[in-house]
Amino acid sequence: MASWLIFALLSAVTAALVAIFGKIGLNGLDANTATAIRSVIMALFMIGVVLYEGKINEVSSILENKRALFYIALTGVAGALSWMFYFMAIKHGKVSQVAPIDKLSVVIAVILAVIFLGEKISLMGGIGVALIAVGAVLVALG
Image (cartoon, rainbow, N blue to C red; front, side, top):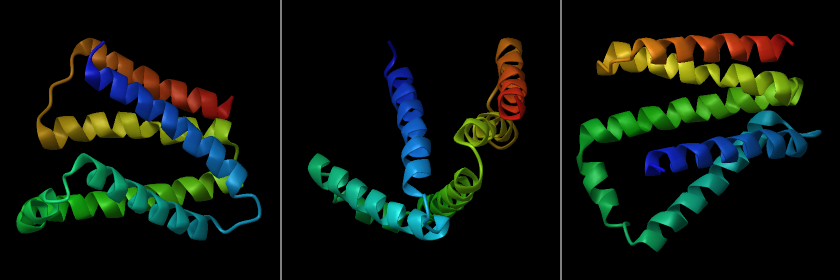
């Protein structure tokens, strides 16, 4: 099995756990405060991973590359907004409805990759993306 597929499946499983643990943990709490705490824990965890891998010296090369730093900063803001809206959604809605709509990010990412990155998508890939969109809506409304 290709390494990218293994990592993608692990991403899907751990993202599913975020929804379940988040819904349980948000009971009676403010979603934004919980998201802030989650972000701090994630940052500490990732710093630990970087230290464990011995790659702390790569931080300076990222800081020196202004273009890379700009886009990494944008991913941080986009990620924070995504988490904030996701936690608000699961606090007020059912995970079984919120999670499928959240996965429309797959459809949006593919469309944006075609537009901004010039990636090509096959007919079968396009059909698959359309099925994801239809499936997400059907699961959320069903």
